[in-house]
Length: 93
Image 1 (cartoon, rainbow, N blue to C red):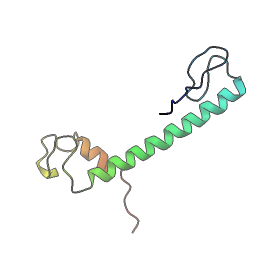
Image 2: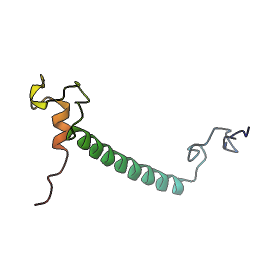
Image 3: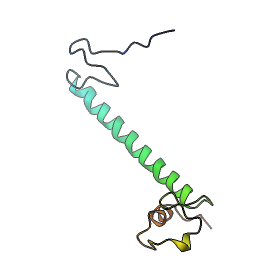
């Protein structure tokens, strides 16, 4: 069996996931923050798209388990599935 060794900051001994915030160069910090923000925005967009795909599918509602949207007790607006459906862009004509 091989052991996975965790990289550690040479100065602070902290486990590194991407960057040691305690001793990082400020110029590199800005680049890392920008990279993380861009990654967060990409993941948020992907999450919205996936929620929209699930909401418009034939699968039961992920919020209440109903198959038929018209039977939703929350109605519109108020139903999380409807919010997810509204996030899907209209198809081009």
